[in-house]
Length: 124
Image 1: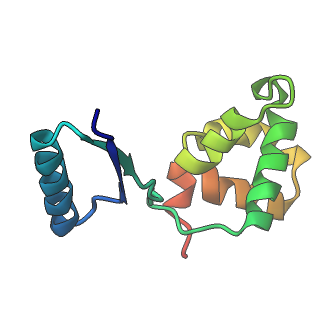
Image 2: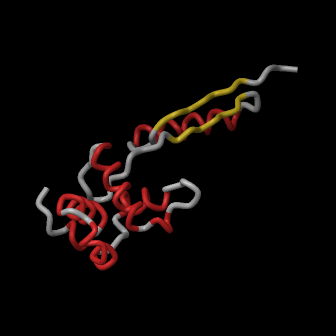
Image 3: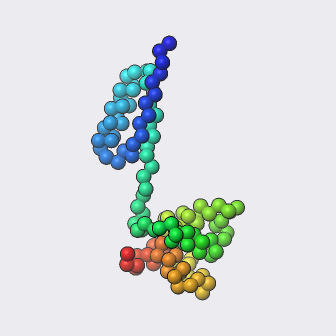
């Protein structure tokens, strides 16, 4: 019994030449039953229209939102809060009731990252 050959292809596929190589490898492997291909698509960062935020600022935003919306943190898991920070799904109307509880810097930071309406008016 002949041995199997394993080919691992790891690439981001963002360019046409990467697609061409991937197709070539798959076509070549389809012709030879002793070759198996593992195709790993490299994860890429996605820009959602917000400028990058450093980890310190991100941690601050998460901390403020955790205080404002403790119901979104389930058994210490703050993924729902992280999603709000990344996607900007939180609207200004949802943040406004907490205005008195937050200092100006905290409020501005949360609005600039989490509210599409407010973020549009900030100069970056």
